[in-house]
Length: 374
Image 1 (tube, rainbow, N blue to C red):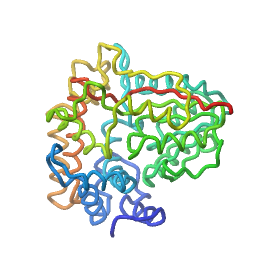
Image 2: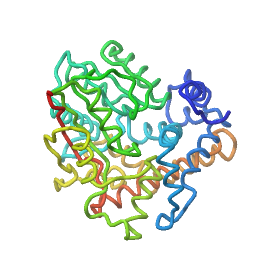
Image 3: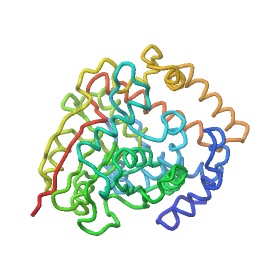
Image 4: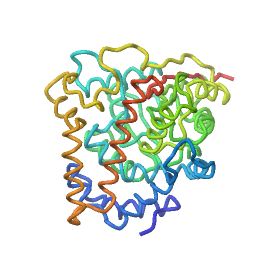
């Protein structure tokens, strides 16, 4: 079955690829239930956007192909990566700050609560989650605030998982998950009291495109708060090592192009927002860095369960996952491309850690903008 070209084809492809009736279980159950031909096709579809190996000599045509086909590329990425994300990270696909004594999932939830407080979300408000993933943050913020949360996402598999997870905990009437392109949102003007995004708008080929859509659907006087993935002022695109790392992040996380924090902030202003605040939360000099779970440094784990989570990111933990996935693929139980997906995600982790340590990348440039009343 060929990769999808339209929303209708995407839904049919997703049902074939993921077998939506068999979404339960762990990583092993999910990858072995995939349609083998469809999975191999979607892996190849994603990899075609990264044919130039050297980021310093990559052609402009290749870069433009990623920008102009961002929906197809990002959708392909999450079709192959979602199950691995949930296995290694849980249902909230984002980073956060860590405090000593605080376990991983507490830290993730606090990061979401902090964003909600920036918006002053209250019960009864209509709130939009841009790039909602499998709905982890939407469910958490809904329970935290009492607001009604609508999530928009371009990936049918993630949408189906978000809907099921919300229903499982009784939030089906307090949440709504919509298949859609965040550069062309299927909502009326002035529809939402507040809008947030958590490490999602980085998938846009042009930040003004998605920020402009948020501005359109937000009510006058409403607030948009979001964590953006950016390169920092320390990043030098002419430094081969810097470029290798950032290209690795883009390649292994389905991102057409990462922009500097200054570009992101100016883009927010350009579409009409009044900037309330802008801060790189990664610069707080925390004792435990935001990238620690990817380091595989068990010494930084804060509770017993965190040891198991961090173990997966150790050299031995990654070796075990690689051996399992590769072995299953070799004997035909897992679809072709599963092992390659694992390698792509290992590249993501390695480059994110390198970028974090050098200070050339941040996953939490927090911007808060307000739409003027008039």
